[in-house]
Amino acid sequence: MPVLVIHSLGKPPQKAIWDQSEIRVGRDPNHNHLVLPGTTVSREHAVFRAGPDGRWSVACASQTNPLVVDGVLTEAEVYVGEGSEVLVGTEYLLVFAESEATAQQYLGVVGHFAKSECARCHWSGMVSSLRRQPVCPKCGGTDLRSASEYRRDSASRLATSEETATVDPRVVRAELERLRAAKRSLIERVDGLEPGTPRKPLAEGEPFLLGKDPQAHFHLGGLIIGQGVRIVWHGRRWVAQAFLFWPKMKVNGRKGDLLPLVSGDVIEVGRNRFRFVVE
Image (cartoon, rainbow, N blue to C red; front, side, top):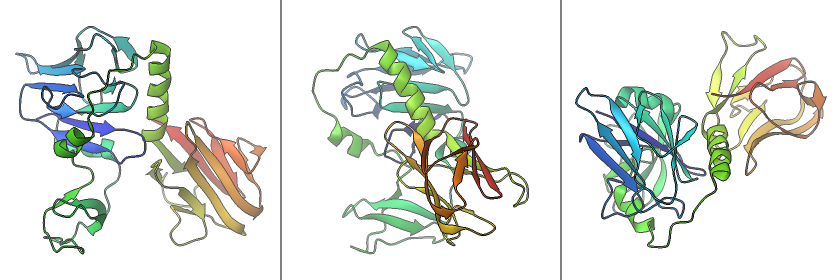
């Protein structure tokens, strides 16, 4: 049973599970199983199909904008497998997973609390995943849906009948790299101050903190004067922003208070060292 994990900027990843052999993707709610709002998404944009041998493929159904499959711009039908990335328009990166279990890795780390929305009153907030039957604190409803679950009704309400915007292939490639950097980035500790090589994903909607605060994603050891370092999404890229009096932050040996990050860069704060990685 295939799963499509939907990535778009400013929103948590969502998963959509399918039990049919064809999945149509586009902006028109009347002709698609997976509705993606956005002017660079055609009314009928792409079709995923299962072949007689069980292998899945994706084909472009749009005469306006092509697909980018695993980094290659294409209008032909191509095979997809576990972890294949399909860019639809410039706003949506779909990751193909062969099962719900393998899809979890593309959704990020799941903790004890998950962002949920009430289907009755549309309250949204954090709900403990440890409770068997969580209850909405606003209306008392029990139909709470995880933010990671694709909501076709919500997507359909956002879809418009506007003309599809034609996008230059060079812009499509640039947007693919932008989405990959936003959604497939993480920080790993490489100074040996914690067992192994701990890794934690970044989310462009919230700052990632290196500091002394108990709520920091990674703790800074040694003498630190200041709040620490925040890693934030800066519109088109990740940047490291220092709030330190001492020691100064370095990225690959270069000092600064606001430095852009490229995959493989090493962030240093005293004896603390972290690597920024785009997978």
